[in-house]
Length: 372
Image (tube, rainbow, N blue to C red; front, side):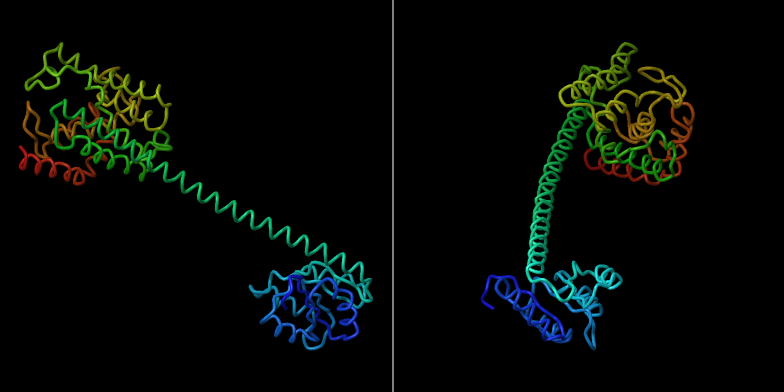
């Protein structure tokens, strides 16, 4: 209509009532009139009023039937509807509000009162629309911010993984152990921990475990070897008792290194797991291990898991002082140490998943063939 004024549609088969309302509102609003619900729906194909004043008592389709159609149509469901009633009827008023009308007027009406009520409803509608836009903008901002946080988190995690990997590789290079000891022990830990979680074994001890964090932390299990003298670490033969006592200190050195990391940052799940891996992977189920001589379930579960994965890899891997061992022989040795060196429950899981461990030995055998 070429106007910036709000558009109001009047729907009533009473021509006198239509004329009175149009005259009352014409100075403030653009007006369309329709003598029936059918005519209203035809107009709504091309026009979008802000508000409809809808008579309830009309032939063919009354106001109650018409508002049901309006509210069920996504294109018209948000149009404000005020019912026009011939008389005060509490039942009709309640029914109209239930169907989605925002108000009602009673014929005959007071023009000034009608104008004020329309102004109030349109103002409230605009405020609600503004609030909804602000909510939408806030949600979009929130989504954008969350995306930025997620990206930053991914970057930090990638950096963390890279630092852990470099540290682990430094330890391997000093120990003259090449070919992926860290990756192989991670594979073994993944097999055992996945089975623990899937079968709900030791549920209290595994509660809250994040496998990805656990595997990242496992890379630091031998980090304390950084402090071990090269002459001991790289010795091709058997260590003397004094040398072995010095080698055993790598568990305490590992704890010290991780304590220093926590002092710079703060304790978290990764460092908590890393400290346990570093400090307890040489404890034995029968209490003859080190550094504390713990036994049974007094040994933290992470240490018991690493003990199996670490020993298996040591058995199948070639070292300066030993040849690699076939998978079947390594399995036999671990099964023999069930209940002495290793947690019996974990040995049973290892035995049930021996074929999955075999893939580790096959990779190591190929490496030895290619680079040995």
